[in-house]
Length: 323
Picture 1 (cartoon, rainbow, N blue to C red):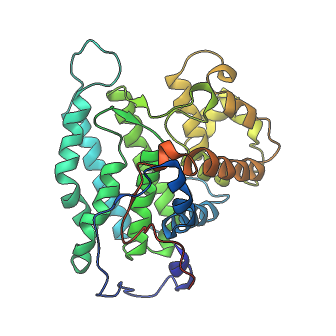
Picture 2: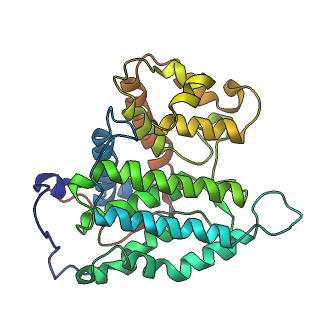
């Protein structure tokens, strides 16, 4: 779904990466604010944003209940996420004086840290086994920080990077696009919400009432794309409790709104001011375009978020190479 994949036909049989590909363990490359220029010029940035926008286009105007192809790789990714979910059930919160940041999260995370490569190996075919250690790093980065017991859009970006890498090595294909968002990413969101609730995770670098959401951003982008040209749901309807309750199972955006209203008290305009402002935008396509701009400015171009991003052979720091 990066440039190379978009040009290849979706039915091409094994497009195995060249055997000469050498995978590496991703590491941080953005150490100071001036390094941000390197990131914005990098192949990683171009491929990452290209991936987000390709999926944005793929889900346009489609409900979550829309019928789409579910490949074996998609099923295996859902099974991986189901395992993470089961581990939450097996690791109940501990009694502690502090209300937030339950230390049982560290036990849960240690299990993922130990098992990540084995989990990724269940998704990646054996002829691509060399890619597993590189790809597994993004999975480990995608569930929050075990020291601070927090979660934010940088962790969410690591999960999108994980999926992007699986596309780049050919595990996920062009015709998996809808299932990547509706089946895999949606299941990931469910597991992250359960983590956030169970262990009372802190929002990482939250802007409080001035941010879009304490924890997520991508489901608002893809969720607004789903609603483009909807026959009757307009942006003003997402602050209407009845509209949300009746439609949240079909639309990711409304599912996010429902979760916010479950987690927060008080008037919506006060606890989620940015979203309240967005509800005044006349059309979903304008909301979608605005959110993409906001995502670049508030997440991808913010040093506190990107300093944690890791670069390897699949998402490299080197400048964009023209084909």
